[in-house]
Length: 88
Image (cartoon, rainbow, N blue to C red):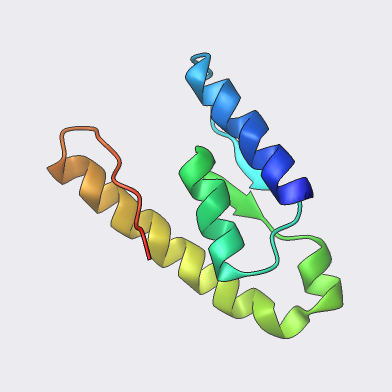
């Protein structure tokens, strides 16, 4: 899927030391998709097709992504720079 491909690209960019901000986009249609993109190393996400195809999901995805990023930053500060992904 497009989401998996983009997440892999972001992950590889981070592994190779790319440190500029990355906005992850492409195939995000749910809260879980947003988490996948953020866990891959995206600093932010962009919603495209979902805003046309399923606009009722957009507000929830944005709220979830913001909360997820805030929680991730909190974990980073307590873990001395380490990121601990949430497993469900």
